View 1 (cartoon, rainbow over the protein chains, first blue to last red):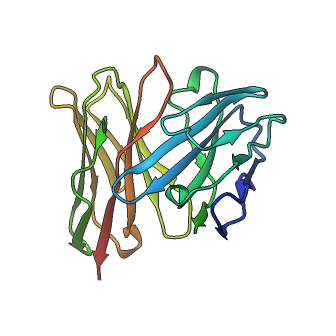
View 2: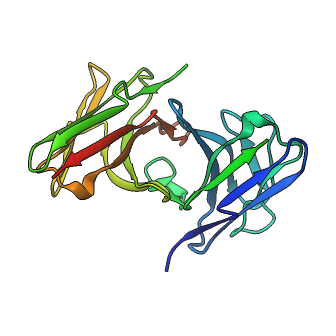
Length: 116
Length: 112
């Protein structure tokens, strides 16, 4: 089954304690991206990756890091989480080429993070 | 600066009636538009899209209309069903960047 898998699905942590949210896709997609969903703000892009070892900032990258060492994996790293990073996070992927801007994004089920 | 806006946070309709969800955008460079649907505890899933060279795209009960001069698009669901109750996100992208910009979302409730 084609899917994007995120872990953990739920996490409560404390300020300053480093954490990593993993994301893996099995569709051989080149493009992967992280979004956060907040009430009244919709989905905002944090970071994206066009392919292995190619990453770039989205609209709200502050406080986050990513890496793309393998095509299937795109972890999101919070080096020193703060309460304003409490949010619902989604990983997504899609095929690129001539469908970069028309291709359908496939989303994971989301990771709800609470930073106390 | 919200380039894609969904000004109605919520919408409630009766089963069998039409649901109309609206979306406005400000960037004239956007030339491809999509709607995603999201159920609780799940990720968004693609619903329907439209290119700027068209003004209408239909897929079963779902139709998206695009008014480029008004920078406005709408999603029509006819007839609405209780299973359509979800959050609907409008999104836009441009050929230049390939980046997808999402609206705030509209929560649709279809009452039996």
